[in-house]
Image (cartoon, rainbow, N blue to C red; front, side, top):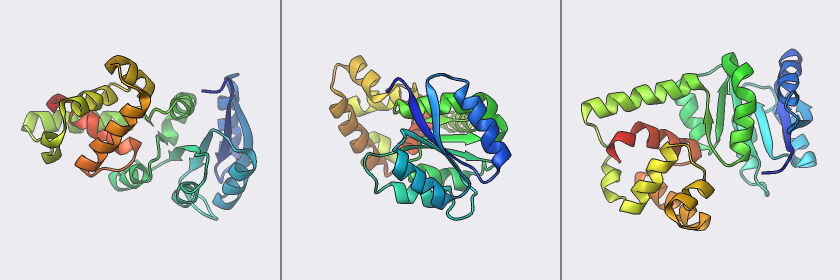
Length: 217
């Protein structure tokens, strides 16, 4: 991870952007290199500045957060995104996961979550606001209580199960590799195999699955 993480910040409310920027840049390892009030400008700034992270409001004119994410899927090098939103509905969260969004922060908790979310996604980890994490863990408890299991779990190899369990423990690819004495590339290969067998897409979706089914691994 670079010594200073460069960020493009996009929200259609100037006052919100100002507050977020102040919170972000209070940390000397974070620097906002561009601000946008709409999706089109956000894409242009990301293309211009090549930041490590984009903090993007889902609801914006000129291309919402989902439109920005889809456009960036074709870009290299990739830009990790943190979605900033008022939405906690499962359908919207699922759509973000399907796009491979690593960070999902509720605006109500941005004061405490924004810096941690940026650092997490820059390091290759997923980040969910605690309110969403609580929801996932509640779902996990319900699954364990009911004895419900995902049919794809039986298709996983013992190593894939170990990788999935460490994903649930919020370990990065590098940390998992060190723990299991395998290379990061091999960890990524296991991640890909797990996603294919379980028919899930994106890092957040994988983390959510791992948390939900941790008791069955």
